[in-house]
Length: 376
Ligand SMILES: Cc1ncc(COP(=O)(O)O)c(C=O)c1O
Image 1 (cartoon, rainbow, N blue to C red):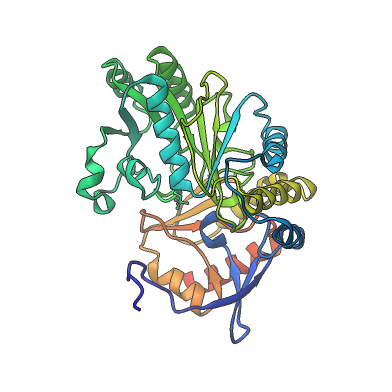
Image 2: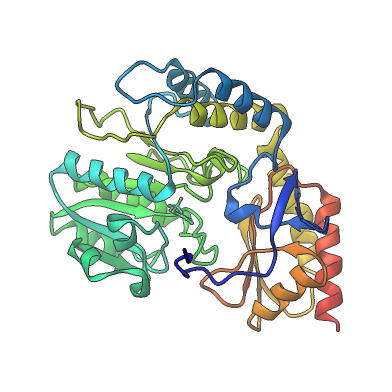
């Protein structure tokens, strides 16, 4: 049987991975500054993660959401403590797109409205409502066009106000730092205006933290740089360190009722243990603090690069923008220097999303490789 050919692949075949490194069958070591797309938070095959998952696998891996699973409550409590979002409620699912789908659906149930405001260059996933709020017509099928979505630029408060005044908007969805879009951030004033406007017009503010969440940006969630309370927060990727798990956090003003949301796999025993292990290691190794320290180191080195235009992002969600397209440079970094990096819809930007266990010396290795290519 052939694979459905939707991914343009690099000719690398990882067979094992440890901490910040990935290895192929020949034992070639690659430095992972991509984290499998911001997924590896506490390091590949981290000891506590592997041991907890192995123990859980031998006890019970899965049962449906029709019976009690105390691991879900343990996880909710640990997450409340680390995110400081004590009043929020947790619903677990399995992917980022599923988290977005549930967030939008919940906003629509709660407000009894259906139009969504999303932003230019946003990426929120591939399922139907999620892709409809993603600003990329090439990945939207005619089926997805049924959703009512208005795309606006960041930082145009008057345009958001004008749309909300029409009275039919159920949600405003935003990334505090755009991931796939290339690390642009809305201004502080705009974020506070979004919160206020959503309150005034009975619309839910959804913070998409699927990529930025779980300590990557130096705060637990990227929106927490500001003092706002979104109605719904979506999360996935780094939450499970490679175990497929996602979820939404729901403001106490939104009430649950039986059957409102549901899933077969979401919140299973293995998924809960994966997230509990991630939270435990993030705390023990103070990785949120480390992300900030590493950003400072990164910026100091990046400022000295020839032809650098902009240094973007926060913590360990970073970008280097050049005055040329970086595709060939990223290939050289992989095949000549054995370093994985990420791209984005901004073709001139290299995206850096490493495991949060990275050390300064790994960035030094990256900058030496980059300098040797830029000077060649
Ligand atoms: C901000 C954001 N939201 C949602 C998604 C979708 O997540 P998933 O690929 O797990 O469905 C992504 C994936 O890159 C993302 O970056």
